[in-house]
Amino acid sequence: MGCGAEEKPLSDNPLTSERGTVSEESQKILDRSQSQTTKQHGNHEGIFEFSGMEEAVEDARRNRPSLNSPRDPSRSPEAILPSAKAPHSQSQPLDEAAIWEAGIQRYEGKHVTIYSDAPRKHIEDLPKIFDLAYQEWCDYFDLPPALPIDGLWKIRAHVLANPESRPRFEKVGLLPQEVPPFANGYAQTKAIWIYDQAIHSEYYQRHLLIHEGTHAFMLSHFGQCDAAWYTEGMAELLGTHHWDGEELQLAYFPQSKEEVPYWGRISLVQDEVESGRSLDLGGVTQLSISYQEENRAYAWCWALCALLENDPAYRDRFREMAVLSGQDTFKQQFRAAWQADAPRLAWHWQLFQQEIAYGYDFGANQLNWKTPRPLISAESVQIQADQGWQSSGFSVQEGQTIRLAATGRFQIADQYNGQAREIFSEAGGVTFRYYDNQPLGTLLLMVFPEAATLEEVPPFQEPTAVGIEREWTAKRSGTLWLKVNDSPAERNDNQGTPEIEMQPLSTP
Ligand SMILES: [Zn+2]
Image 1 (tube, protein in one colour):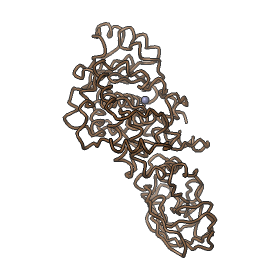
Image 2 (image 1 turned 60 degrees about the vertical axis):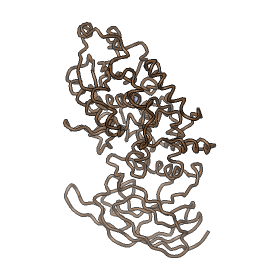
Image 3 (image 1 turned 90 degrees about the vertical axis):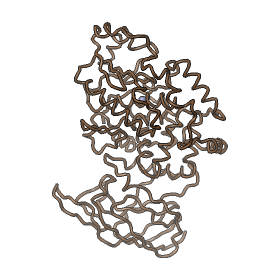
Image 4 (image 1 turned 180 degrees about the vertical axis):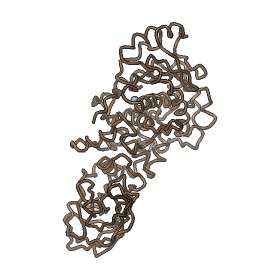
């Protein structure tokens, strides 16, 4: 689908030229704090490449700072911010009269000064949005109350009507030479530039402002991160927002396409998967700044961050990563945090990209991993109709044949043709609606491998429709997972617990 307006990684990414914008003083501080880390591993592979990483992981484990322990004072915002008290320290004094005469208007917020030559109605709400976003950033990153002092952090934002406006901004000192040509946005520690998006979508205007603002905020408070997927993924995660005119919510998971005009990340991932271009964990975390596939890289980075942010099994670990993002050991620390369950995450990620949808219900689709027992005699399990994939608690061997038989009626929807009406189903499904080419309510099974390493995680395999009863031979070994078919966004109108009997007919 068309989500044309997007920044290109090369031009947007703050990593490319940010060094030049940090004052000498704060650069020394950055250098000092970086040299305090024990070891430079200097590898550039993706986060989830584990080969030969034991030593680094051990190092990272030993040295991993805790959010609860006192921070290295040299990494506090005051230390990193270039002359934190002067909001526009990196530029010479501006000639406001010349700026005005050039047709550039100034809009003042508490945490941002916006200069723009775009129509007033495209810009006038943005200072308020930015100030609300600032509060959200502080809350999200759980900054100690004393650190983000009101008025301390203020940046300059520039909204150019279009690329032809560049000379106008350059002439009055609002677009320094070190800012390269960019497609839609560009960020430094204390300044951001975007092209007016309100001509396409007011949503996307705010999105891009918050995306670039997130870069600036994270650069200011945590320093540079050398994991491009994380940098862009976080900017996308927080940039994706909900705004009702009063309240702003960042890191919002869109419930419908209409909420986020011109955004298109979910549709992009769906298109990629449908076209056979899935990306495994290693693939996403190795996406580089030079990845020129337009919006697709951002869609992938956003989707991975959205899973890590929204699934309760990952959220705390994921949020802890931000404060470490400017450290040389970031990648190692990230690996260490996921070392134990990386194969499960890799599998979950495959599944998530298959099922991603507007309104995806993370609570109803959390995976309930269990240590499985081999299925050697007839067993029966109950599953919840209002939950996605659920572990049966039993494992099967490749080549093993079993008979599955399901009993019990359950509710699969509470509406029919727009009218409130409870729709019941048995495990054969009901044909009034389909999801993923199967009738709603059909019992489905899948074998989830219990892989010990990332390399052992096999590619995704389509689920098998069981229905009321079926004899089935396992194509691979692993734990048997079950669910009744429904959209991952529409589980909350389901009710009931069908029972499934599993009887081994052969052993491999
Ligand atoms: Zn970006």
